[in-house]
Structures are given as C-alpha cells and as structure tokens.
Length: 244
Length: 244
DNA sequence: CCAAAAGTGTTTCCTTTACACCCATGC
DNA sequence: GCATGGGTGTAAAGGAAACACTTTTGG
Image 1 (tube, rainbow over the protein chains, first blue to last red):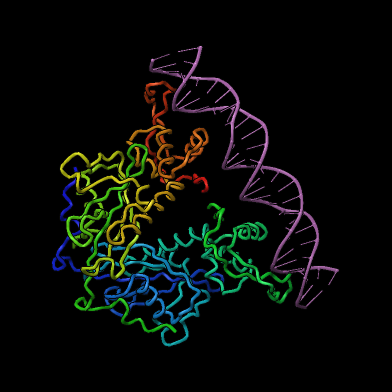
Image 2 (cartoon, chains in turn brown, cyan, blue, purple):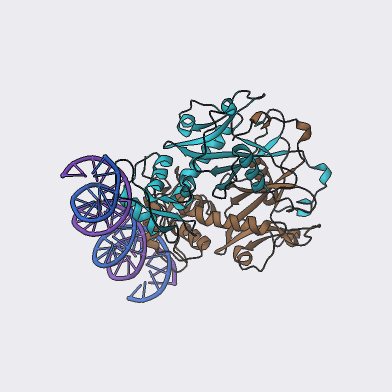
C-alpha cells in the first residue's frame, strides 16, 4: 500500500528540475476612504504596458519573508516598523510565465497612508489603483495576478474579522472612529458607531487607550480618545461582516 | 519614492538563482478515535532514521496541486475521488535543507480510514503517528517538518469550524454521530450530541439526508439517518471550538 | 443656540447552552 | 423489561442589533 520511501526526499542535487522562485507583493493602503493596491506598469514583454503586482527574485541566501520585505522596501522606499506583511499563497502553474517555469510566493501587506506615486517621473509606472477598479473587471493584470489579488482581497476582508491587522492601515495613534472607517472601507459597508466601539474594546489587550484626545473637526464634535495597538493580535469574539 | 520598475519582473532566464521546489504532504486520517498523520522514516542522511513528511519534487510540467496529488497517490496508493487536498503554505528558509536551497510548498490532506501501513514489509518505513505524540514533543521530525505539521494541525482544527471538510474523514455515507466523533477527535473535546445535530443541520446544503438508516451497534440504540456531503462547502454560522 | 461627532444606555431579538425527555433498536 | 444511542423540546443565559440619549466640542 505504501511504497518504499527510500527514494523519497533523498535526491542528487544535480538532477533537480530548474525553477525560478519569486515573491509578488499585494500592498494595500487606504487613500480618501478607498482601498487601493500598488500596481506597476510593465515596461517589457510579456504583458508589456499591462499592470502587474510588484515583485522579484528570491535571492540565494534570504528567507521568503525577507525577500518579500526587501521588495516591499524597494518598491515603496518605506522601512517603517509599523507594517504588516504575511504570506498569502504560492502560485506555480507551469504556464503562468511564458518564458520559463516560475513559482511565485505571494505575500500581502498593509502600509498606512502610502504617498501616491503619481506626480514624480514614476507616474507612468506605479500607481495606487482602487480595488473596486479591479473587482469590477475593468483592469486586467499581467500573469495570474488577477487571481493572486482576488485571493489577497478575500484574505484581507476575512482577517479583519478576527485579528487586529486593521490598525496597520492607521498611524501609530488612532481613534476608534478612524479604525471603524478602515473596516467600513475594506468591507465596503456601514457600521454602527456605538456597537463597533463596544465590540472592539471588549477584545482584551487589543487596544490601549492613551491619556489623550483628538482635535475635533471644523464643525465640532466631541474629542475622541486616542489608542495604540495592544499586545493581542486577535479579536474575540470576532467582528462579523454584515451579509451581502 | 517608488523606484523605476523597468527591471522588475523582467529578467534573463539564465541569471535566475537555482532553486529546487518540492511538495510536502501532511496527510491526516483517524484511526481508533485518534487523529494521525502519515510519516515516513528516512533511509538516508541528512536526518537518517528520523521521521519526515512524505513529499517530493515538483516536475517541470505539472502544477503544484498536481504534484501534491501525485505524491499523495504514490505514498498511499489511493486514488479516491473523496479526498481533500489543499495548499498550506510555503517554507523556504535557506538552511532548511543542508544540501541545497529547497523551497517546499506544503499541502495538507484528509483521507478516511487509511489502512495502517504496519504489517507489510514497509512497516519499518511508514506509519500513522498519533498527532498527540508529536504535540507532546516526544517525536522530533526531520528538516522543518515540525513547524509544517504544527501549522497543518492548527489549520485543520480551525477549518472544521467554518467548512465541511470534516466529512472527508468519513466514508461517503455517514451519520451525524460519526461526524461528531470526527470533531471530537480533531478538537480533542466532547460535544453535546443534540446541539451538534441542530447546528450542523441548519447549515444549508451542507448535508443531504438519504432515505436510509444505520444499523445500531451490539447494544442497541435508535438507527441513525445516513447523510452524504451536500453542495455547500461552508458552515454558517460556524461551529465553534470550546475554549481551553 | 445648533450641528457634529464620541460615547453610553436600553430594549428587543436571536443564538447558544444545558439538559430533560421521547424514540427506536438489541438483548 | 433495561440499556443504548438518535433525535427533539425547552427554559435560562448570553450576545447582537437598533437606536435613543448624553457628552463635548465648533460655530
């Protein structure tokens, strides 16, 4: 029933099939209450001029996470501590790159308030594209990047429910309503301010209040308590997305 | 801020660093109300005689899922339709294999009632090891397989909550109490039979009743309705693990 | 004063939990 | 009859949703 495993996992390094291993990054940020993802316009075939996810080779002596972090820094110039980066999944269809066999380890990341790359000379090449543009089908990405991005969006939406990653869209210090706005933006929904406040605060050690208030806006309003992220990475009981 | 991406994703195939890409499989099954995982005893260094997860190379023209399925068939001889197989994550630390740079795409799988490989001449090489043995720390696996297995166990436990994969531990036709036993085994807990029945049945289209009853055991009992898996892969609202 | 936003209280409803109880079978 | 396991009923407790209400600011 079970074959002799003598030859399983034991191999001659010379006979392994040649693969290229890359990382691709799905970087989310929120601009103007709109969830956006960093895309790059390709400058060479295949898929010349098409939008693609940023990414690159894994170097011979670095971990996968390190490669992802390095690419992220290279693409955004940001080295902030306060970022979120996690493996998403690996995509390795034999024909996903017409030139050669490439297996890519996709990651997804969150950075708060990424400055829009438009305006500089890079404007033609990199852009923060609204996720709604991709979900509506108006934009077709290179390679299998539509699939990767779709998976990343679902992962992000789902992970807001039971983890505190939403705080990564905010600056280090934030108010509950800023955090609620993140949820509303990513889930594309409206949430009751009172109930949201209670649910997020009852999750132990996830938010730490500071002895500090925000400044109200132009038209007034009660100053809000300022919080920082706590030690707990999970929210229990989870927040749940409204259905449909 | 964002560097020119002309050179991103555009490369000369000759200059890519050489990687070996493998798949490793965490195969779960239940024997005697104990959750077990298929391990193989290595026959060559490194980690000679240590237990390891089954796995092997991804071939030049196959998908990652196909490689996993192929390895699974080769290891178990089973080609059943009724199995579950899913990507778990990718592990690629530069030193995870002392011989060369190997990136492995780990998968996890469920097969019902896998016959124990003990008894044949393979007895020395492959075994269904209770997960409790590994969790207690009594068994140290080769490479980073302890990490992979730990992740797989958590994934399995978590995924029982909101999906119908538990049915993959059962034969094609099963009773609710057989399904409950799966949950109790994987979660290592006791569940209220009445409440379990209601919760699992209120998930629409996840279980389809047949016009059929089980035979009671030796000591009697009411015959149970027989079910098959329905079209829905998700359970909502989810079943939740009892805490602690 | 009013408008606006933060935050709390309260009522209603729904789900979960615990466990009692009935049903169908073997012996 | 009794024991065993399948399945349903139900009352109490707990949590979620909707929304009224209070607080603190700007104008």
